[in-house]
Amino acid sequence: MSATRAAAPPERAATGAGSRADGRRGCTLLRHLAVAVAVALLVLAASYGLAPFRNFQLATVAAYLCATAGLTVLTGLNGQLSLGHGALMATGAYTVALCQGAFADHGLTGGWLLAVSLVAAILATVAVGAVVGAAAARLRGPYLAGVTLAVAVVVPALTVTFDGVFNGDQGLSVPVEPPPLALGAYFPYERWQLWIAAAATLLALVLLANLVRSRYGRTFRAVRDDEVAARLAGIHVARTQVLAFVVSAAGAGLGGALLAVLAQSVSPGAFSLTLSLFLLMAVVIGGLGRLAGALWGAVLVVVLPDLTHSVTELVTVSPAVAQRLEGNLPLAIFGITLVVVMIAAPGGVQGLLSRLGRELLARWPGRRS
Image (cartoon, rainbow, N blue to C red; front, side, top):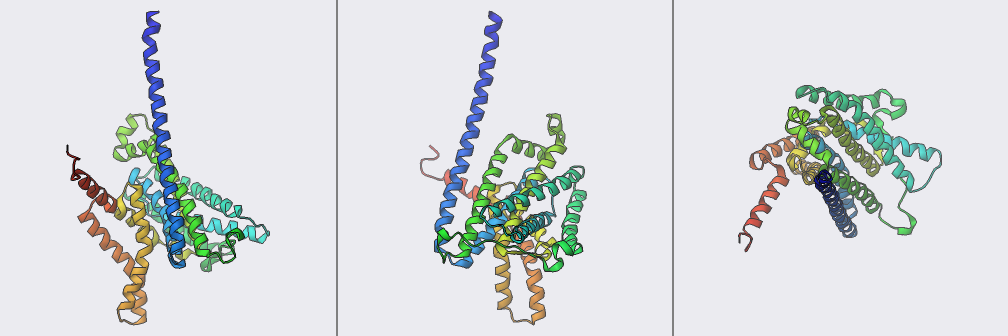
């Protein structure tokens, strides 16, 4: 009887610890859902007050946010460097284009078809990400960067090589149905695009935020900090790295698919190596390792081309020089911004905002007492 009594308290303690962990996970999920609902209502209200072009820009930010959030999980949380996320976005974009084209050729209609195409784009990119991740898990440092760089070069080249399927440099059109008639005959199409992109992005961010807070997120960080210690703790390092690459590829595939839906076309020139460099620099500038930093990076990717276009219009140069500036100036501004941010705020924009917030809270009256 004494042995039974001695064994009972640890079991009850273990049960209590498990229930507390489940309770914390449930509270985290509810908090993320509440934030997502609040953001959705804010976007819904803003879509009625913004001009159609601004709605389109905001939808583009949402599309890029999927890719930058996935790259943040891979590079910021797991420590793997990828220079090929533009190619993964191209995989998702071409998949949704092929699916939508097949549906249109067979005369299929319905709002649910776009959801099927987006899911197919995610699955196709996950398959590519699993193959690349399995190879990347065996490599380190510059060798890993070289493999992902090769992916960024090979995937657009495949679309030109198999021009019978992908239509070469001309690309493919992405037929998308107009907004439902229930929204009105003159409902702005850009607003409908924003709703689609925001809904898909918020769902992806909720899943990623819960993944980061789960034990998988902890294993990602453990492998990033010290692979030897993680292996001694019983973590399968290679499997964890492949999982991180798959999750990141899913985000990139969804982002590329949304971009294809917004532009209603896809071509290899839209997913060049420059895009992969932009994405990597964007997550570093926004704040590596923070999903909130991925938002600042996505905003920068969308705003920077408009800024450089305005700069080239202000400068009086020949058309050839203006075209060369418009092609190279965004990358130069990105590089300069990266250097400035790393000197002034090593934690990125989100790290700077977090530090300022902590300082303001520390100076709040009554906080010290």
